[in-house]
Length: 384
Image 1 (spheres, rainbow, N blue to C red):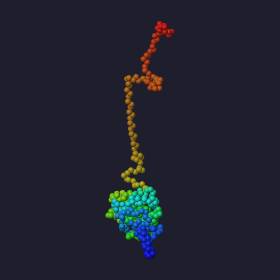
Image 2: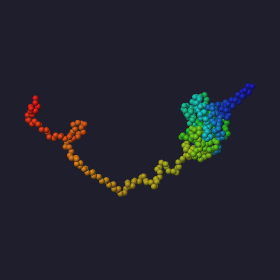
Image 3: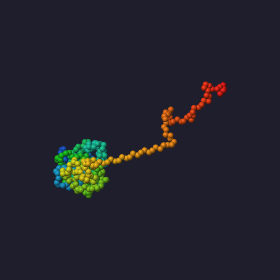
């Protein structure tokens, strides 16, 4: 009886460990990767060890099988720019993650919110706005990332490979930042391609076909993804949930299944139609860009003096001067005697404008009616 109980308990523990490892790939009794060099394989729907939240992925947008991958190519994980057309997929007008539900699950627990913000490298108060600025898509190729688990109020990083078909949220640089099946924040993988893969590999897994997403150096406004329903191209605006999806004005000139695996890095700057211009390489046979351009035979030589300055040309006579116009004759005014005042009269009052005095109405002095030299007035004139 005791032996049967012990056997049942061991099987139960093994089953929980297998479920948390995402498909039974993790050894029994292990809650996390055993060593720093271990790379955990995570199937598309498995929550993995110590998830931050419950799954917010929408199963109707998952991609069960990865696209075909050319057998030839460089060994080890290959870098692909996050804005490469066809790197991600999705269903037109349908988000692969429920972002609002993700925000509610995180913000309901302050400790999880704080740990999530630290792992993602964002301010704690901006978690909701940051998540709304991400774009829900689906991985179309197995991708290596730095994942995070949540335990005892803290986030712990570990390397992992996400299966193609995993629903993720990518930022405006085209890099995966959240895994929707567990709510874990994601970062780019650590330098180096070494490590031991832990867990049960899924059908089609090949370490030589894993990619590493390289963020763009400039902000992109949209991503050109593959419609998982009909295999066509869809342009999805960054930060939208698919409600603004549309067909690209000019679809990329490559096959959706191999466009992201051409083997050459793609430029960081996408054009408005979603295509990537080929990088320009200097032509050694071309002239030195620092040298001046070849002169046009039809244009004048700047080193040649102007025609009027060339030696030997006859001197150009000066323009004739304009003859001076004589002044108009002054017509005398008959009413004006034309004689100036002999001497200006200074005004007695400063406010007086200095007008000439009125003529004296009595130019001659009045005669004395009493010419008596004595000056006495006759008494009879004024009687006493």
